[in-house]
Image (tube, rainbow, N blue to C red; front, side, top):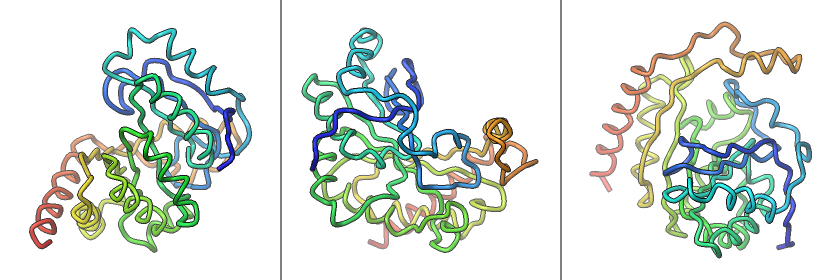
Length: 250
C-alpha cells in the first residue's frame, strides 16, 4: 500500500451528532461512484476535487475542539470514502495512535478481494462502521444506485472476519425500498452476520433537490414528498421481525 497523507475533502462538520457515538468531527471526502436516485449530495460525486488536506491538518482541527469530543471521535464519510482508501488508513492509524475513536460511514461498494490486505489494515484501525445497504435485491440495487450489490456483501463479510462492529443504515424510499420482500431481504442479510450491532432506518427526504437545481442536474425523484418518520419506524420493525425469523433458522 502506498502511503497517502493527503486527501480531497468536500467539507468538515466540527460538531456532528448523527454519524457515530457522541459528538464527532465528521470528515466528508470527495468522490463517489454511486448514483443513488435519492442522493442529496451530488456535489460530492466528482473525484479529486474539493480542498486538499493532510492527516495532520485534520487532527489539528480535532485537537482544537478536543474537549467536546470526549465521548465521540472522528467519522469519515462522503461521497464514498473508500475512493480514498489509503488516506483513510493513514488518518485512522494516526487517530488511533492518539486514542481517538474512529468510525467509517460507507456503502462498501468499492470492496475488492485483491485489496484485502489494505482493508484488513483499515479494519485494524477502525472502531465502528456505519454501512449503508441501499437495497436487498441485486437487480433493484443496480437500478437504484447504478452499482451491483455483491461488493457490499463482500465488504460486510470482510468486516465480520475482522470482527469490526457494524451498524446498518437503510433508507426507506417510497416505491423503491418499501416492499415487504425488500425489507425482509434486509432482515435476512442482517441475520447472516455476527458483527451487526445496530440498525438505523432513515426516511427519504428531498433536501438535496435544491443542490441538483444549482448544479443544473435533473433530480431523478423530482416531486417526491418526504417520507414520514413513522413509515421508517414501521419498516424497521418489519426488518427486525425478519431478522429474528432468519436468525432462529441459523
